[in-house]
Amino acid sequence: MSEKIPFDKEPQEHLGEESGTRALVRPEEKTKTPSFYKVLILNDDFTPREYVVHVLQKFFKKSEQEATHLMLQVHHKGMGVAGVFTCEIAETKAYQVNEYSKKHKYPLKCVVEAA
Ligand code: TYC
Image (cartoon, rainbow, N blue to C red; front, side, top):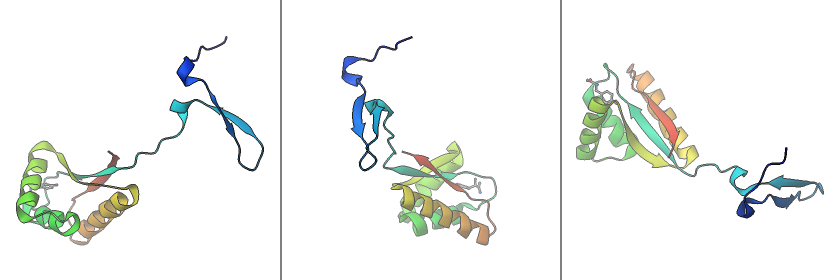
């Protein structure tokens, strides 16, 4: 069976740089890695509100007012965006918050998601 390929999505010939190999790659199938990642902060029932505000100020450079507003949003909605960063910085921030919270014996968690 032959699959029809839309005119503007014709496979493009890609020459392997050194190997002399050729590969056919449709433009929309080329791997695109997202450039930005959200650090999400999750609600839980045990972490004190003041500690969450402190974390948002320390790791995400929020003002006390911004941090309090975001903490309350997370408390009511379940999660919120603490910041948007490149991949490596987002992973580092989430790791630092999670380690810091373990050290302080609070279950507060951050996770990273493509923006
Ligand atoms: N829900 C927590 C409480 O009532 C407060 C809280 C807010 C915890 C935001 C985590 O990301 C969080 N103490």
